Length: 585
Image 1 (spheres, helix red, strand yellow):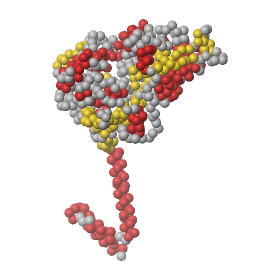
Image 2 (tube, rainbow, N blue to C red; image 1 turned 30 degrees about the vertical axis):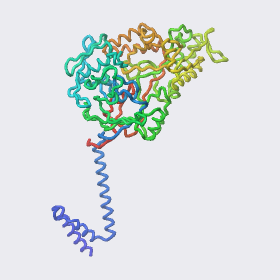
Image 3 (cartoon, rainbow, N blue to C red; image 1 turned 90 degrees about the vertical axis):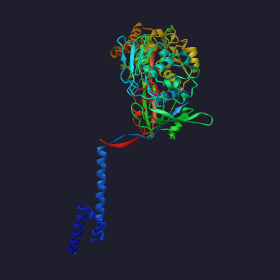
Image 4 (tube, rainbow, N blue to C red; image 1 turned 45 degrees about the vertical axis):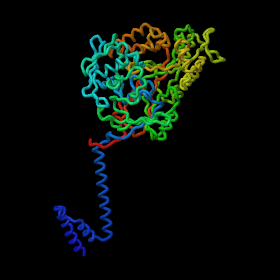
């Protein structure tokens, strides 16, 4: 019986063999004949063996595919982000609100830009800036073949038009002062020169300005510049163009939908659609993120308290350093026997626990800072004011500032170690001042906190330098040039040297650094500036702001390391992605 089965099986296998050799002879009915030879138990065993073989083949094939391929960005998808307020001027010459600046960065491109590492790199320009021997003339050549989003060519006329319009006082651009002494000249269709009466390395930052299309804006008169429909229907040369604006019944803008521009000079952006959704306040924007109305929100926790749950598994939280610092400025022009004493200022600086300060005030959403030159900026050098309250108290004792055993407060003769911190009514500024008040009480300093409305702070205290110490924030930009904040010529209003700090060596270093394009020289000057600043302490730099970016896990490609302004995050948006695919390695 067994030999009979073997003979039948052999015959069937031969048929299958012939069928495989000559597929035209193969019939699936032959497989059924084989199974008729087996008993039920044998069929079960063969079936299980076949299933195991199939699963192994699938497993091995999958592992082979995964091992030989990698996940890469894919074109497509939609990215949405929450924005605060209402857009009005999607125009780089007029944009002042954050939503206007964000949209302008998405729609318009400049001659140059700052990459995710904070480096000055070409945008519409073909190559690095050419600087003349006297360092006063800058030559820019545009990339060839550039197009506006309506298909018209971009040329030097557009650049000259944009700058001349900006310089015209009738158009009332807030950026006019930055360009008022610059001569702009067309050399040929793709080449432009800018001539500056002075050598000014910080001026280069201005070349990131978005360029307007002359064929769109040349027919718009100055008195209609702010009211032109083109401010909400822009034609730019950036990575995205505005596809649709959705409004409420009352006329408020709810969403703006932007599509990727396939002819963008650096290539089609990965994300096809970007949607910005506008909210009236931080709380509703945060709620919109948590209810998945939007994929991301971003903010600098400066004037509002935003609660971020850092432990949520379904979000990514990025803390991107911003070139902005908060400081306590001492009024050095007043004949104060307290704050005029360097020993007192040094003791105050030594007795601040910055880590505790940042945790208490910002819930950890800030970075320690000690000088006006911040990490990532040209010339930054690491300096440390050690947290050492015992050393601070010892120094005060030696200088004659004696602690009263009953009150715990110090005095030198009949002069109490007492002064006032003035700040505005922003929530975090108030909390910062109160934190310093508590920390300094431990070393015997009696601090009074005066909180005033923002408008009153500027008009009654800042302009007239009417304060003992002032808690305030300053934004420096990508170039660290400290001229407007720390040069003695800027001590009076409208200058921003609000401490009225005067040091001839500092003045020389600042002037020298901004009057050359030699990075080595500038870096050396700023190193010396920081060392002298730490010795003199005209202010105590408390912390560096961060841009907090909350995104869904599928939002990938963000590689930002530093920002001068929140809108700069979009400079690299063409490389972000929300869709992926596998590609052979």
